[in-house]
Length: 127
Image 1 (spheres, rainbow, N blue to C red):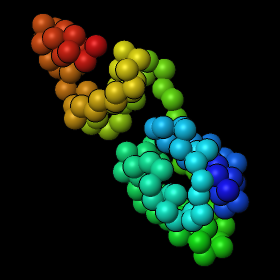
Image 2: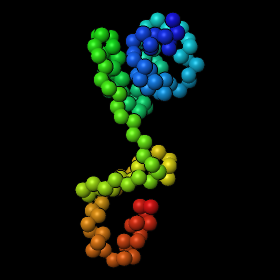
Image 3: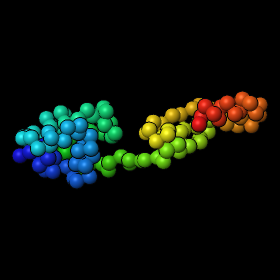
Image 4: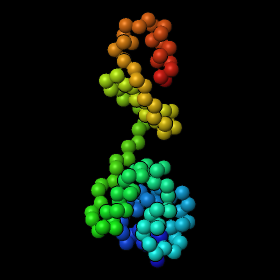
């Protein structure tokens, strides 16, 4: 049985998609496998995955116990330069299309009282 076949034996298709997307070297999916625990623990770094270590540890435990799996976390893709304003914070998502998200602790209400020169500098930095 290959790694991919053992994954299909234990996980639904949407989970397999998430697992495969985290595997750096797809060739290992065609290698021989006997044990789902060993394969899941060695296929990819759970800490570096989009879903996180706790998610995969919980998923493996549930599969081994024969319990149902929770839904996969939402995968949100932001348009380049998306801005989210919250009370006291500004979040710039997918800066310049790089996938990097930046958060600033800033009181936007205080900008209205600021001198134009300082305000322009702040907006230039945020852009």
